[in-house]
Length: 148
Image (tube, rainbow, N blue to C red; front, side, top):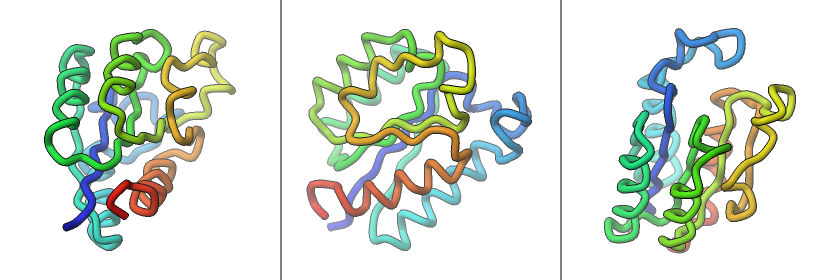
């Protein structure tokens, strides 16, 4: 049975490719997801992507992962990284390993972006590599998912 990787994209990531391209690049979310799906398939894994601008929808999707066979989560919680105890608690509650991803280097940005409510629970954090950070996370997930 193939490993199942869930990629969660938080608020404003639906605007990839057009939102602040000097910070986030020109790759659209659809193009990014297609790349990640193909990479996962080449590694023998299934990948499902989900994006929402709504905190509760992200929490609901995290909780659903507990029952849908998800082996590993990759999350870019966007601004919720720095504000959401609810997303943190949901990730802690499902006990599925995860990696936190940021397209930009949050440590070269505003000070409020330097704190993450997720990092201390994550197996790893990838920041500043653009869309390649997601690809690194998929490769890591394929090697470290419980069913690997």
